[in-house]
Length: 564
Image (cartoon, rainbow, N blue to C red; front, side, top):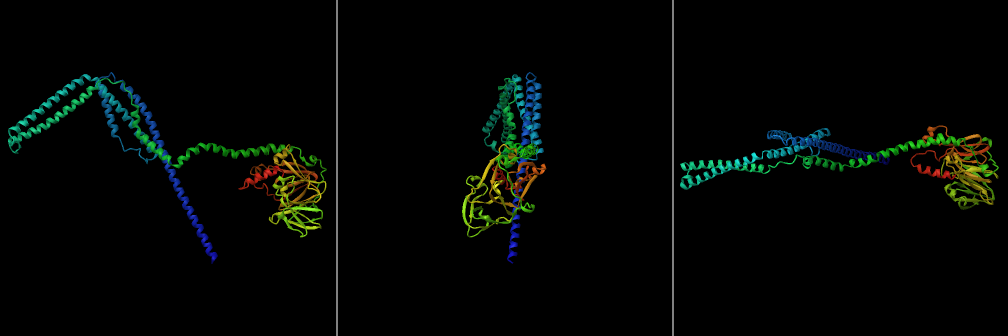
């Protein structure tokens, strides 16, 4: 029952989390879509308005030039020609003003195509109205200047008309006053002759007042025209007024830009587009550069290295090159899950504590902090630290096993006196030496060898006999004779005897190397009785490029440089 409830709760919790995740994804998608639509609409709006403003500016410049040429051509024309053109301008202005529609510059705006068309039409109409209005004002002033004499005569006539109208109005006022003085009661009594006469005078007075006011206004207007009768300067467009005609367009552009400034897509779009070409170039370089480098190594350097003479560690060290004995019956596998070793009196064993499975109680155990104090870095990097030093006064059987890893097996490699083995300490878990003889380890750099540089193994560590090496290997360790030439993966190599001729051999196919499935070079061993030691399933450098293995790969490369 408890398991059923647990399963139900897990089921409900899992699907509840899925439900919440789907809600979050849908909400984020909706917000993103709304933001994108707002950005697209605002971008289209601003682009259409900018296009309209630019087109209106160009149209206004052309229209202003045409108007300037046309008006200046009328400087010496007749009043009839000027009046005709002025009437045409007024007709065009009436037509343009009649076409005015509700403003299209309020947000939100219609679709981009409709907005562009209407914005262009509206901006052009405003420019046309402003240019025609300036032309009309100038033609009116020019007409007044050309008719200056007629204007003064007209002013005198308007004044005389006003005087006559005013005099008639005063006569009407006096008649009413006399009638009211003569008939004070009858003039207020409806139905009397005096009342009827007074009503007629009042109506006549109202009409005379209107005539007087009209005559006065006409005189004022003519006086204003007559006072500005000087010939105006040559016509020129007022650019500020023309720019002011496009103020609604500029205001709409500013509003659209302000809305865009609040949109996070617009804020990020320009910086992303600025760095996008560089990022694309970097990505392309990251794709092509490793391919080019690997092609250079595979088709140029590796063949060159394969043709170079092999390294002979025995010749370099001036050793006799005594080889190691092979396993009996032609067996190459020398490892097992555990190994039982006989520790004789006068011998000592240095072993990792986790590999020491069983030992006699009578044996003496101490801690030795480093494998060899002459090589502290090598000891630390190979993990040969805090070792157990074990010795016994009587023959003792010690069992060695990799108890913490079921894939590891233990091998025992005995180096007799006079023999030497190039060995990578990463595979070492312990050794047995004579108590009265120090451990013979030497380090040798090969900086002038292309083999060493291509494999990044610039340093070789040599163990000299007599010594027994306790070696570990994944899925087993094998010891084979080099014979007429053998090739194995570099990741598997643990060591080789100094009488072996060591060189590198390019991997057979390029594509597995390009994809990181194979190393560029394999180790090649030549030499009749020489032997080499390797583990069956190497763990180092097996899967480059996997998640979390970059740091491990870099560490392995550094350790390989130092021969560890």
